[in-house]
Length: 212
Image 1 (cartoon, rainbow, N blue to C red):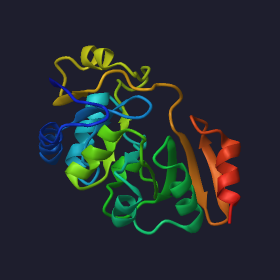
Image 2 (spheres, helix red, strand yellow; image 1 turned 90 degrees about the horizontal axis):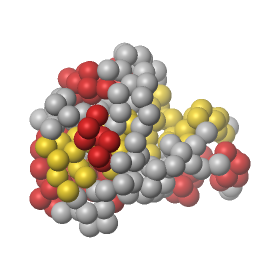
Image 3 (cartoon, rainbow, N blue to C red; image 1 turned 180 degrees about the horizontal axis):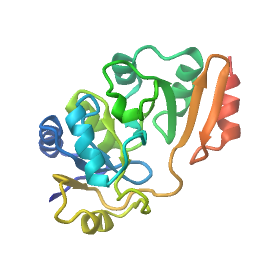
Image 4 (cartoon, rainbow, N blue to C red; image 1 turned 90 degrees about the vertical axis):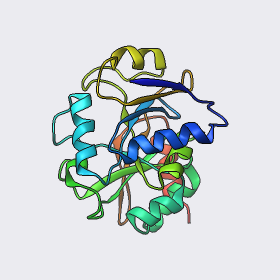
């Protein structure tokens, strides 16, 4: 595994281009997010998704969430957002809110455990968003850990954990903000349903969803 330093606020274009080449070739990249370190791979490639699961030692059937550069990238690749989802996206993104929306046929079923829903968010971290822009598409962002083990905000821990593994590249931006993972909500026709509590309090999500 290669390890490359990257500035958290102003990521270098050449480093991003290198990481994007790795991902386009089916590789796996450990990257910082606004909560913890995550593993980025091409979600549209069944082979890349399979490799991601192997790296984590993760059983099939476990869903993996996605990250995007912005709302426009989400809409372009997952389809138009329902009114409630769009309202939440505009109010809470960039930030730690994952929305479960309809999964298009372009996303492999393996990524969602066969579900017709897929989780997506726009993180408040410039490296994550810039890497999505450099790749030109959404990326996976499952936590950079072995399945069942704690996730980490420390690149030193990630480097030790995956030393000698099939991860191709670690983008080291120093420690990430840490804290709780993203809040996950499912967008329904008439509102939202809490799937996993997280960084954004549920009452704030509900209040935003009710706004007209």
